[in-house]
Length: 331
Image (cartoon, rainbow, N blue to C red; front, side, top):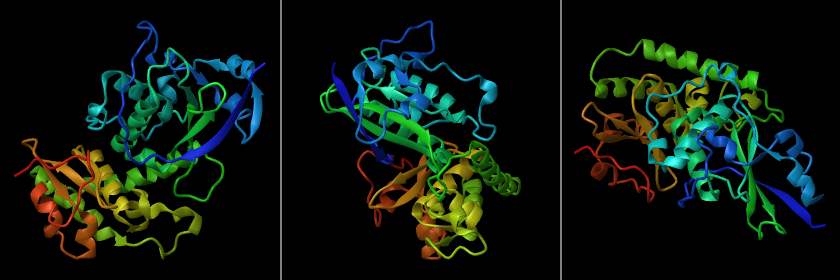
């Protein structure tokens, strides 16, 4: 009887890979049901590092996970009117994106098995989908985790499984509590809604400027020295949207993620782009043209206007865009 050696390697995905995968979905059932998964409760018993399990043991726990009813979804992760990163995915990947989002909004952990012939997505497609989810839904960066699992005997040394689970990416807490996460997101939304309520009517440019100046004025660049907050509450928050919004401290990622989240919540198109180990934003005006906004450099150089609504030519004077990132179209 063949045996399977499974080892766990933690991986946090921040960049996107590119290859495609064919689809064999059952048209009468949920698209995700044909992605073979392992129930997380049983899966945890077989993935401890260096654990040996029988091949048949793995086979007996491979089964579909049905969708959780809509009523159990997160009350604070609202579906966006626009999902720009999803729009860049292939059709089969967009369907998996939708299925993943349902499960993630329910904090449902699951494991994808790439070795199954009916799997509708491959390794690179999986990462394109999860990267797109994080790109469109900035709050997922706070707690969404993926881990790769290798199977030397059965899957020729390649990744066979990837698990999707939840951990605090900014907190020093071992056990994830969905209720705590919901309360934290509700507090972020409360602050954002108070800002949006003060946003004056006007052009898109005026709205982007108002929201940008709010983040600009409420945030100090840096990683440490956040006052009057327990250490465990802010550990790492400077790299996420809660850094500026709740704690007033951030590095470039925090500025960009917070601005994107605030704009999206106000109904304005905004994404995060990057290059040269730096992050900033793209925004879209009424005519569909896009422009760069860099709140980090605006803040550190105390010059908001210099880094607001820049064309691609203007931003490239002192910024280097990573290959494949979005470029501004405005002139």
